[in-house]
Amino acid sequence: MTGARAGPPRLPPVFVGHDVYRRAAYGGNHPLAIPRVETAVDLCRDLGWIAPEAWIESPIADAQTLSRFHDPAYVEALRRADEGGGIDRDSSRRFNLGTLENPVFPGVFRRASTSIGGSIAAAERALAGRIAYHPAGGTHHGRPDRASGFCYFNDPVFAILTSLDAGVCRLVHADLDAHHGDGVQDAFAEDPRVYTISIHERERWPYTGALDDTGGGQSCNLPVAPGFADADLDMLMTEVVLPLVRRAAPDMLVVTCGADGLAGDPLSRMALSNRALWSAVAALVAEAPGSVVLGGGGYNPWTVARCWAGLWGVLNGFAMPERLPSAAVQRLERLDCDLVDDEDRDPRWLTTLADAPQEGAARRETAALARRALAVPRRGRWRAGAQRAAA
Image (tube, rainbow, N blue to C red):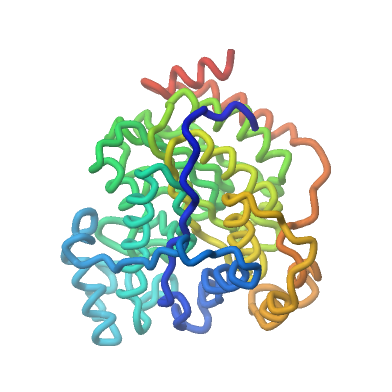
């Protein structure tokens, strides 16, 4: 993955975070009721990777800010549900709240609002020519008028809106989560300044993002087969994604790096190593003057925390340790997850950040997907980029 855009030296990356993510959330039976962001932060601190000047305390978005994209009635319903500890049946049906998917739990409004504030702050730093890392972001399923797919609000949308408000006229949202970034694609389907790319598992919730779904001409969707591994990702990045991004020549990138495509995640059948995700993100952020890098899905606490901690290291150019310090090992040993059986827990998850390198070539079906993707009709920059890549 070579050929990055040349430019002036970057300012050091910043890490946007908040202690709100240390509070219990979602309830005991929810896939997200695991320590993800806080464990990634702690692993980085165990390694001495977060200097005081690199840490940005996430602001908390207020109701007026949230209503820039979300229906004020929905914003108020979530606030009241949090305040009152529950939600009435009509509001639950209308806003998709208080369900097994999107439960109402103490602090839900503050937590979701902090995610929005963090992505706004990340975009502001990225506009100054930085890589701004916000792993608590990536709630890409959130809809204007309802919760969806564990996402109450949609923070990637706010990172994009902040960038557009500042005059950015070419922005790419690249989504590497195992689930299609439907909420972001739909939010900007009619905006020629925003182009969305999503690599996600086919026939996986939300069952959108088919190959021929171009989001009104502004999207490239790459639905991949189960077992999608490192060589497959490298092929799609090299042959499809990076050529399209380079043709678009974005002023800003927003990357959603969900960790649910990693081998060992209980909610997908993909088989990536964290090394492959790190390489893909590094290649993407090299293509724009500033980038916002968000988290996303991920339901295995060991693979998620190691991936997001290691990604911060990669973005900074830190050397990856062969073995984690004892404090980090003990931290990982204390984790638990009902969705991951004991016999399926890789011993490397307790002692390393980097997964073992994968061997093997990209599969034929991935090569076929790349060819078909380049042949999908697109308008404007995307069409030209696809034609150039195919040539």
